[in-house]
Amino acid sequence: RFLSPLDGETFGGVAVVRLQMTGMADGTEVVVDVNRDVIGQDDQPPYEIPFDTLLWPEQEVTLRARADDGVNDLEVEIFPVIDNTPPDVVVTSPADGASLSAPFDVRVDAADTGGVAAVSVALDGEEIGVDDAPPWEVPVDVEAFEAGEHTLLVTVLDRVGNSREVELDVRFSYCAEPETVRLDDFLIYTYEA
Image (cartoon, rainbow, N blue to C red; front, top):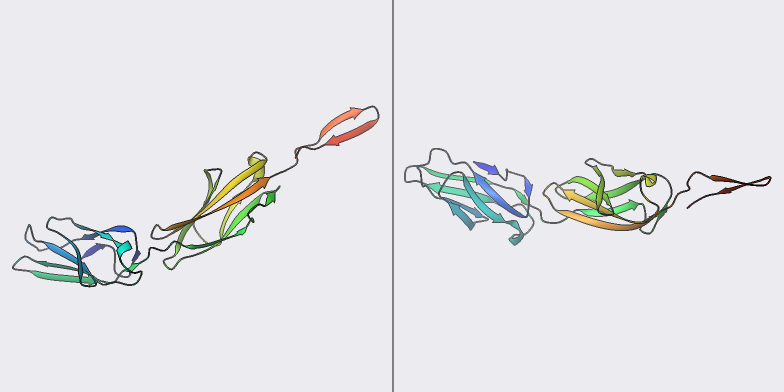
């Protein structure tokens, strides 16, 4: 039986096909093929065969394992789906180049054929939040950071491990508490931006 991938599972990248073949004599060679093209063999449990899915089209494939020890002849097939395409990503808020002065949410529209696992947001290289369920939103409190220019990096990860990044330049500006200065009988309020 296949331990990974599983029947109907979406997977991608350089994967390892893992098998458990019970009742076979020691040293029995297990041969694995994809759509009848051999990708590897192993003769020692646990049976593990590397599978570079990047060499195959993104579609459902027939993954077959065969073993014959002279007494037992086993063959198992499953039908996983190869996915090496990163998720589709649109950052709906904030806009690139936005000037922000109050807490806001980074809002993302994300989609992937195999499903989106998470959206993470980093500010100037430091992760500040992750959302693992739609709607994809990560709150940001601008006053927790210095005023000025910043870079937001939004990373969307699909369930297979494919990711896509979108970088935004933003400016944080906010007013500090007013400073009171008395000049004779006039009060003057100044604000720092």
